Image 1 (cartoon, helix red, strand yellow):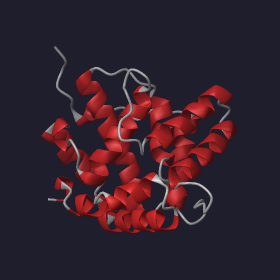
Image 2 (cartoon, helix red, strand yellow):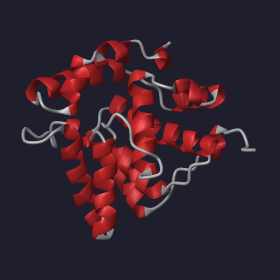
Image 3 (cartoon, helix red, strand yellow):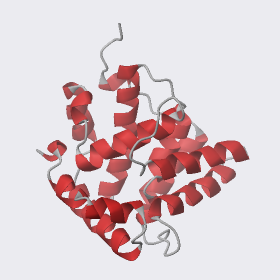
Image 4 (cartoon, one colour):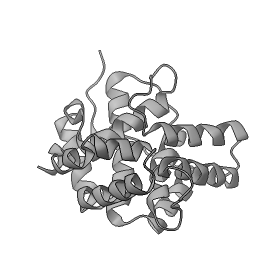
Length: 202
């Protein structure tokens, strides 16, 4: 039987790449987007521990910190969807961190897949966890699967601030400019309404 998850059990890996990814996210994200990125990792780590899913903490943390970097003006792209732009930033960042080409490509893949409807855990545990946790944080999907005490402490330490308003504007802008993107599909499917009804904001 698995031990109930507590906030203090959620370990943020302390490696040069993780510290650098946090520095990049802090430097380019708004406070709301930064807290969202940190929460994405914490929701993923909590869910993984609760479900007994083994994952690469460094890879997941770096990917969490950089998964929305393609939304910021300095890295926004008119050529590719924002998750692909973010994946390319992560690939370049990880090259600078000394990661192997294969590991850099994994960061790219995890970030791109966070926009998929589903990522099978057996195929890609980090991609599965980031897809799930970002959905939890943005639209409130399956947030009841995170223990209430963990939810409360994460939200106290990393408050949501203006993430609902900011992300609604960002995803609508991405969808309008890139009509073939996942973002555009989400907008057509009512993502903005789901964002504004996120139970984490109650």
